[in-house]
Amino acid sequence: METMDNLAGRYAAFTARVVDGVLTKPGQAPVELRRAVFARAARLGGSGPEDVPPALAVYVDKVARHAYRVTDEDLAALQRAGNSDDALFELTVSAALGAALGRLERGLAALRGQEPD
Image 1 (cartoon, rainbow, N blue to C red):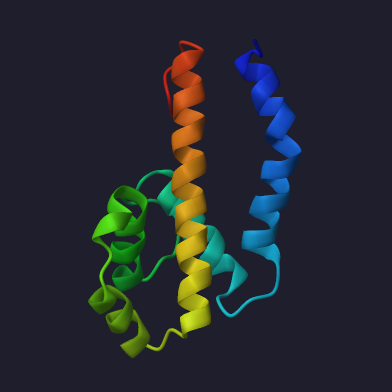
Image 2 (cartoon, rainbow, N blue to C red):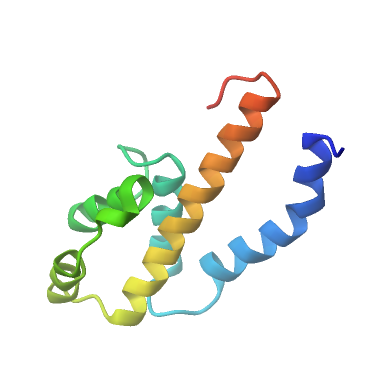
């Protein structure tokens, strides 16, 4: 059976490539905004130093905590605010990835007997 540290190390390079691909490669949404969305979602919402516009922050929090509650109207409102379909896709993926990795880190910390951040 693998230890948790081995699991984290085993997939660290893959995880880094995925995060790099989502957050730093050219896209419709600005890199800084994708990074801010990722960070906010990794904390599962709430206030932080990131610069995420208020309407988008509500959406990011919903994706991070209750993705099954996202509606067509949520996306339509963001489109009306000037976001393209491609930008919304990139921001949604950034939020989902941030939330997933945030949960993974908390889970691994709990298994090691550590308090999550």
